[in-house]
Image (cartoon, rainbow, N blue to C red; front, side, top):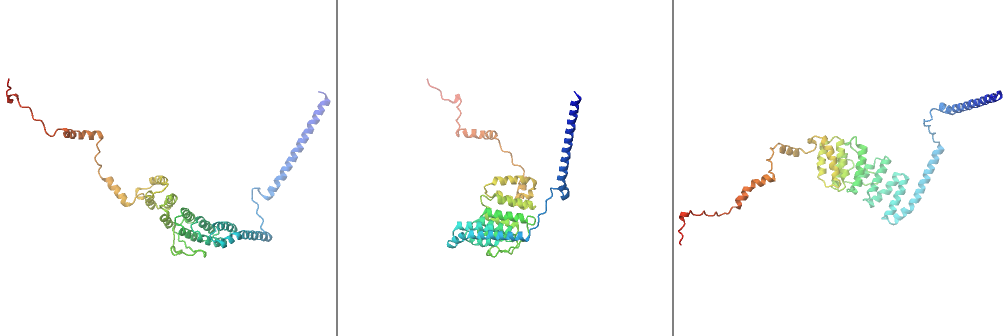
Length: 331
């Protein structure tokens, strides 16, 4: 290799090294500049506080809400006109209720649902809607709505289960807590169930059982009642309830029986049977065992002599006289 070629290779290597050094410096500079905002403003994962709404923003939102409410009122008017002409127009009522629900105004919903359910009290879905709306708006009036619903349609399993589910979720920690009920002005107070008396979840389950306990599809009600008693440590009451359950003709009695079989081994007999029945069982267990029954072969062998006796003739044959007593034979 000539000196000239060697000099060219050295120049090329210097040039490549300079370019590599320059590229590394630029990359380091860019990395520092990207990391600088995170260092100054804290970790990127921290949520930035939302800026407070200005008075102008609040005013704009109020105007939009009023505009939307006016549009809904305008959409409701044709259905209200149909109801004024024909109060029994069910489709007009349901369409109106859907639009009123969008207002998110509990007073408007009460004014709509009260006359509707007065005309159609068996529509349990709308009792549920009303109670859920009262609970959503935290008015404290959901229990009176439930009460009027189960009075209007006491054989509705769905409404009872919804009522019991709500009560379980809201008062499971204090089942005997006294609840003072105050009906809303749009619901007349019923003399059958005074709202000023104490009511507990246990008594509510008993009321539900008295209304729909014999329903063929009442499995969820009974199972919920048993689970509630077990959760509260009322095992003797749960045992008595299981006796009632297994005597009730239900559609899914096998599932309830399997649930009882899974629960029973963990409890003593005193929790599973009434005292009188338990005493009878113990008395029977204390009696000496009965004699073992004969096998078919032994029973046949035991009755064979009797059969043979029955087969003998009633009159026995006379024995033959001796030859000396026979008369002589003449030739």
